[in-house]
Length: 78
Image (cartoon, rainbow, N blue to C red):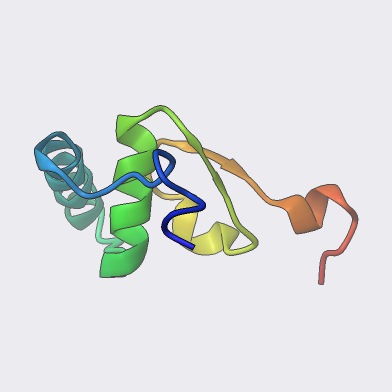
């Protein structure tokens, strides 16, 4: 799988760490902490100006990034 995705896997690096730190600070200030794993995904997306595609909107609404819920777009909502 890693070979098939070569060049398309973004990791947590120094530039992402700076975005993550700022994001965590802002979320803590408003009393809305984020799960560590989700916060890494959000920081990587923010750093590279990407859209997070997920059905887990409630956890990804807090950071200032872009979000797309494919389930909602397809009409599969609760």
